[in-house]
Length: 480
Image (cartoon, rainbow, N blue to C red):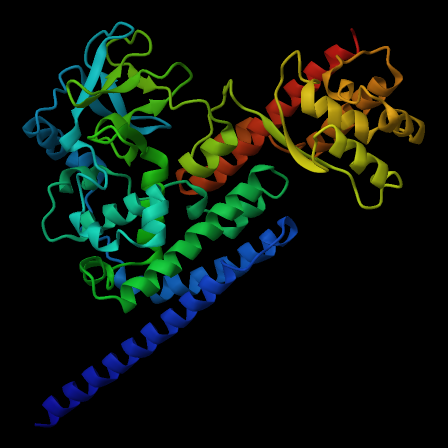
């Protein structure tokens, strides 16, 4: 009798503790929603990120009991099951196989020699994961503002629905997906601190803030609603799960035409999404006749070569924030340089007026690329106005040919253009001093447990290389 009474009392205390823990968690979620929703200017983003990170650490600790990764298999252990699933669904994989590559993780390997434009993969529509082929329960949330207007969010929730169903035809695919990522959502505050001098920081902070807000929004929604999605996810929806789902979508998604061709649908394409990125050309398309996504070799590959595809024209900052990698020789890379007319500039009003008349903003991000015609168009026009004297401004404000400020070619003999060149080169040199201690061999020496830190440093090193190339391009102007 006494023993039963004691067990009952212990259970009651445990239930009480769990209820208190849940109460604390939802209180922290409300704080998170408020912190990630307030209006901010650029200078407040870092402080806001620190506040959000502190709240999220508390939430992750409170949600630890809901996270159980003990039964999640290793990716390499489920390759055979995944390939069998593909075969059962009429996917031919004779030409390729899944293989683990150093520095890349899993990728696709050529089983035989492939010529440029050879067909590599053909994935039928029924096996492409999107809101039309998976997670029918999402219909219950079709009027939700985030689900309706943010395709990647809808796809992330669909992924979690299929993950937590008792039975899902997508299980072999879900099991082979990465268990974590190196996106900015997985980076610590110390990792992000390393980005402090990088133009990528602002986008990274905004991404973390947006995902925190979405998480807190859905946490409350699933707790307070009784639809089929809420019943399935309310007890398992955590920040860890949501950042995993969002990172999966951001790093692997593509778009295919809807069945009636009326829209493009954000999708995950099994097996195709095993391909890693390399410079080249886009060789993937959706064949409406075969109703399949088809991927062709963008170049010749030898037997046992890793098969790469081209993800598209993106900067390293875009790859870093959304895809969790940096491509060392990215031909599409640029450095986002922020330029603006300062409030303390004695000629501010005249410069602002002239910029307005030639259609340029007072403050803007200018993409710098190491190319021969770097000083042209909007960048050259802004720099000219920025460096003008009072006499220059008086002349151009009265001129009928103001657009020449933007249109006229750079001239190394022009006094104003000499000032422009001197200013921009000095600015680049100052930026480079912030990257002085960055050395490639030290980055490569970091261990696997420091993958996120390694990626941050790779991002900064790519910026350093890019700025040096931009400086070389600018130096060529002084020789003209």
